[in-house]
Length: 211
Picture 1: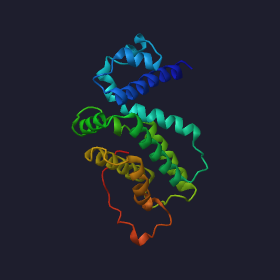
Picture 2: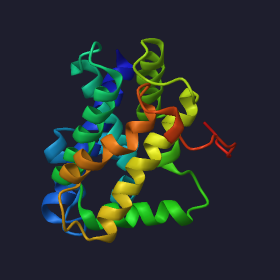
Picture 3: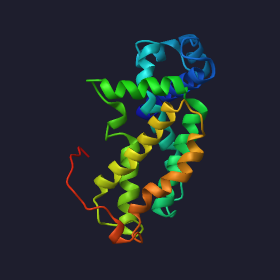
């Protein structure tokens, strides 16, 4: 119970911080405002974070908090491909409504050059665990083709999401991320379907993956 309470406190701080960054900008947001909005204490804040700058590395935490809540509400009987599209839609809704485009672009760019931990590629995240479970269940139920491993399919799905995020940032958010993804993600996921003609599948070649 203590562990869950601790996670909830940290999660509230992260969620409140990113909402404030979105509404009034990173530079204009103070630690006191984050503490007040999260209904925590300054002691709790500094227990988890050395300062406001430390919150810039918590974007993946914000995403995973969302996935944790979606796991509780999503119908497990929903077809696997529909689950994947639902998760993508809800994540991109969160990004459009809660994440400053400026900060998102800055964080994505630092992930390209950082020599430290790449938070978005941490395969222990809720994000990756949930995707592996959905795809594995989809293969067991015959809803997802078995011509590729679960790890390969997870890699392809996450690659598509990152491509859409990077393109949206490159285009300065000039279109709705969520609406555009709703159009193109089903195309990306055609190869996942057992009904997709085998003659149209690209030849399977080995490639590096750490999944």
